[in-house]
Amino acid sequence: MPEWRGVIHDGGVMRREIWSDAADRSASQEFGVDLNWFAAEVSRARRRLGGVSVRTPLQRNARLSDVTGADVRIKREDLQVGRSYKLRGAYNTISQLDDGSRAAGVVCASAGNHGQGVAYACRSLGVRGHVFVPRTTPRQKRDRIASLGRDMVDLVVTGDSYDEAAAAALTRARSTGATLIPAFDAVSTVVGQATVAMEILEQLDSPPDVVVLPVGGGGLLAGCATWLRIHSPNTRIVGVEPAGAANMAAALAAGAPVDLPEMDTFVDGAAVRRAGDVTFPLIRDAEVELVTVPEGQVCTEMLDLYQVDGVIAEPAGALASAALTGEAVPILPAQAVVCVLSGGNNDVSRYAEVVERSLVHRGLKHYFLIEFPQEPGALRRFLDEVLGPNDDIVLFEYIKRDNRETGAALTGIELGDAEGLPTLLERIEASPLRIQHLAPGTTAYRFLV
Picture 1 (spheres, rainbow, N blue to C red):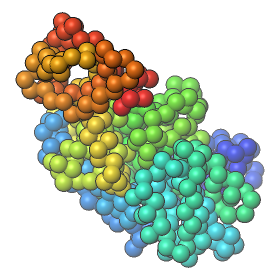
Picture 2: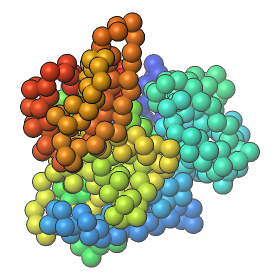
Picture 3: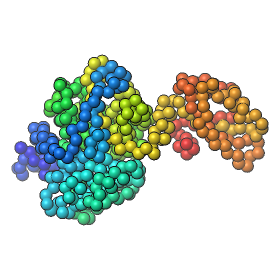
Picture 4: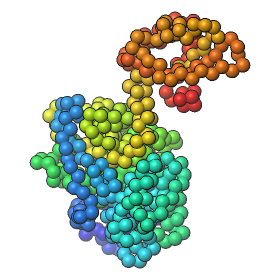
């Protein structure tokens, strides 16, 4: 039976090898995986996690079922220890370390949730740990890491992205001899995450038709897809990436993991520049279907989860269900669908940005630069002649500089209905005022808004 010999480092890239003995090691494929061995490892991981992780609920969601016409259930990993599934992979990895490795300590890089899993595992197992997070990690996640790890974990904030934090964590691991605990790119992590799929099949009377999972580095998708490939081969598996960080789709298109040239880090739990070298081939071989969802649609789903379902989801946590409400995943009526809500670590201070992005995505909020003449009644004419009866000014920043004849105003308008935009633009065209529509994504839009 194949045996995992651990994570090794090669030029800064994390890899793993599987072989049954020295004789066939050279003949093995670097990322090949024996499915029987994988299934046995997942069962062992499940036993290790006994009394540590929570068997999270699988709940039917009326809103998503009504939208799709299917029977949609949500796997509530936001109710897991640390409010995300990441505990599963982190604990499974750390619990297998020998005494010498435990004494040397562990180190990890995280966007927030993996760090919480590592912190909890360190405290539970009595292992010293260092958790590296980028500066973009929300304060709420940083505080939770410190709370879960207590005096067993040191939190290090460094870099502007997950990848920069990962580089710093790797440097520390090499210089101190500590064991690097990967967020996604190691077999032990993937195996731990696969216990999510194991629970889903146990909680249903029959295998689901479709399972929809969020994708960051690919640990959850690789584990669950491989497990389902063994135990429910007819289940359609869909991975959902944020449109601004679709690293797995890029890897599949290129035939190997590649670095994304640009990345939107809003969906911080899934904002990974490069797909995992371990996770990529497992996802490729499982013939997973990949879709992307705009960040604005994720925000809209976060608000619906909160306001309709009473569920607090972080951006990455809302990815899977956002693919359903955004119609990115065609679903047949009456199909049994499972969405994994992967995390609930959302900082309340982010909701203003969540609402903003949702309104812009839905076409309800627009920004304009308006050049007003310096004369009485100019603003009144704009309100009477340009603004619609159901439109509202939600931002007005007036800037008068050296020009005594005109003054520019940055104006935010929230429409009563997205379909009202064409008529608003027609009134703007007919107006004598000089008005510039700031389109989302442009340099002027990002600078001013």
